[in-house]
Image (cartoon, rainbow, N blue to C red; front, side, top):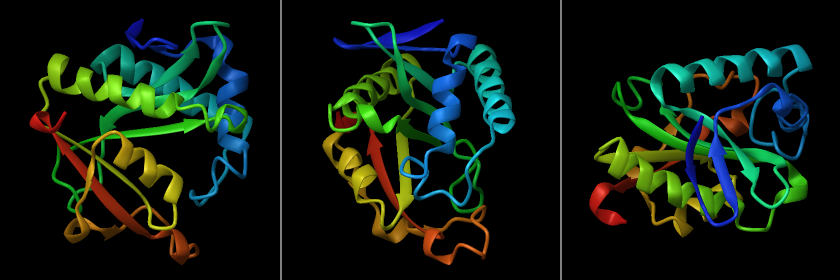
Length: 182
């Protein structure tokens, strides 16, 4: 199932041929620098299966990004319910992403995220989309700014699912964009 396309990317649901890339992303210490854990192959497979099912059932999820030129999967970008009440109200939709490191620095995430914001506001008729990242994650914050999101410093929070064993990953910054901001 194709969600949308950009000049260089197909944004689609996951397929079994994406497993190696999904495993790579979830085990890579650079990609997962701001997450408290890495996933084993079995854990990554289970997560990919869950995402695929969620996308099929709801149209939301972290979608596979595929290069049009080579049909190679490179990572993901997507829309999903944040599910961190009471920090964010129930039903809040976030945009998020991860790429294999060899694809960093080419503008793929920015390109995909812009297309998905249009999709969120035009197709899904959402009023707002948020994004959040560990305060030290400057790369993700730069993407948020490039796609037109604005920092909501009053909304910064300690992520409730980050274990106390990782205090340097707890503090998250919040960005928002509304339908009229595109």
